[in-house]
Image (tube, one colour):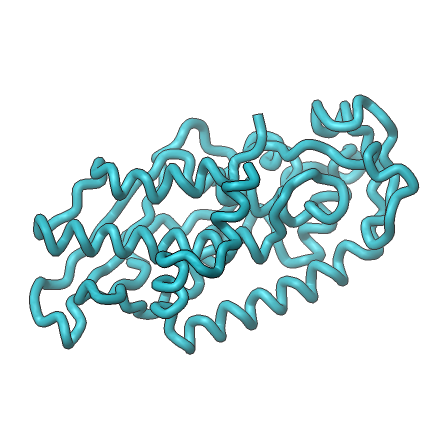
Length: 268
């Protein structure tokens, strides 16, 4: 697990350097502004919220039924009694649909106060930088999110889905001016569990400083997704250069998804 965490945070890895150098300034600044806004909204939203959670009833794990009442902005006197294990998509689906008076409704309130709800779009949360062209270093291609082909679904539908593979991640590739070969190509992938794991990871990370034991914060999850998409684009460019098309079942393509899923999925 520590190795996984180090992999996400490592600023010296070769693929991370490639990813960072490829994200254009305008897209990076947009993402930074989005992250800063989200951070400020989050801090302001959580601070006044009193969580009164019975861990066993609310999560089915964690502090063994201890009554967990803390101000998220402060430190509980016994924080080990006020933390819960990370939970998966099914439980988060219940949280974002909870109603006033239910044990997890304060969690929904905190999310809503930070402008996150079941109606938030997946692409808005994770893929903002890729609405703009990004270069794939040394591969002769540039890419961006294919708005027409990608599934831009609300997170309540992602969390409520059963199984995986219902949602598309679609990218448009074009040759760069220096590349000079190839033609515009649409690549549509249906990675199993990818959308669900990212949303659940983000929501666990949102509360990682308060009531949930999760090793990453939201900025780290966002950065991991950006890095993963850049690595994926590089693998897809290799496929285009070698075969002229993309095989979704290619081990290299599948590995890009399985790696981030294994790193972020920390619930049973």
